[in-house]
Length: 228
Image 1 (cartoon, rainbow, N blue to C red):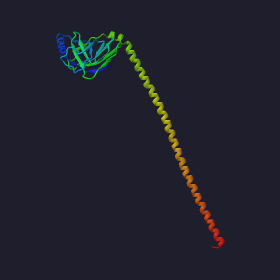
Image 2: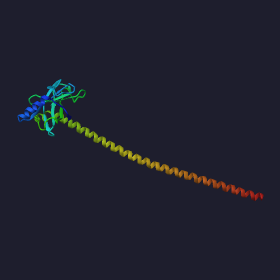
Image 3: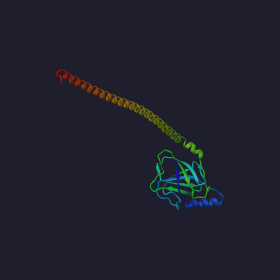
Image 4: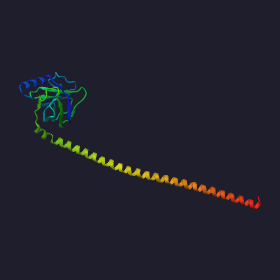
C-alpha cells in the first residue's frame, strides 16, 4: 500500500530536530513503530499508546523538501490491525505519530509479510531538516516473494480485464449483427404490409368494377326485354 499521512509532529521530535540543526546535522528517520491503539494523537506523546512492533526503514526517497516516501516490512508471526503508527529518529525519539479514532491503516496477517509504504508529509518542519536512514538491501531480499506474488496478481487481473474486454467486444459485435438483421426484417415486413394493402385495394376495386358491370348489363337486358 502507499498511503499519504499527515502525522502530528511531537514536541520531543521538534526538540531533537532543533538540537541536530544547531549542531550542524540533519535528523534521521530510522524506524517505523506500529500499534493497535486508536485515538486522536497529541504532540505531547513520546511513545505509541499500544505499540506492538518496531521495523527498520527498508527504503525511502525524498519526494520534496518536506515530503518523504518511506517503506518497511512488517514480518513475523504476530497478527494485528495497524491503527497507530510512529516514526522514530536515530536516537529513538518519536518524531511523528498518526492514529485515528475509528479507522485502521492495514492488517498484518499471522506469519505473512506486510509492506508498509507511506508518503510522510513534514510540512510543519523546516525544509530538508529530516533525512532517511534505510536498509534498502534488505528490502529487496525480504520482499522478493511478496512482490512477485503482487506482480503475478496484477498481471492476472490485467489478463482478466483484457479477456473481459474481448468478450464485451464480441457481444457488441453480435448485438450489432442482430440489430441489423432485425432492421432488415422490419423493412421486409413493412414492404409486405404495403404490398398486401395494395393488393387488397386492387382486388376491392376490381370487385366493385365487376359488380357495376353486372348491374349495368342487367339493366340494359331488362330494358331490351321489356322495352322500358
